[in-house]
Length: 120
Image (cartoon, rainbow, N blue to C red; front, top):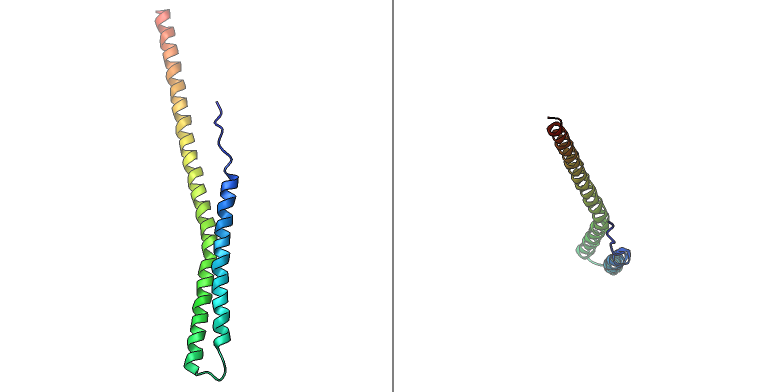
């Protein structure tokens, strides 16, 4: 008996495209703010003002680095989830094999006990 599962590839790919577009939009937004802040730094401006703009740029760079790390973490998490699923399936397979072997042994014991009854 075969179970036919629906093809989920188009749905999965669609979600990846949405996620990629969201990431690209956010990165583009952060980069545009960074460019604006870089343009605000002038040699004739007050040092505190330039320092503040520089701190904002550093925070934007940090946010970009952390945000870029998220998709990699999602991939890692997906791999961990898949590994856990495979491990659980392996355990269930071992349990099923053990139950099948016990059932076969039980059937053989019943078969031999019936043979003994016939001989007696």
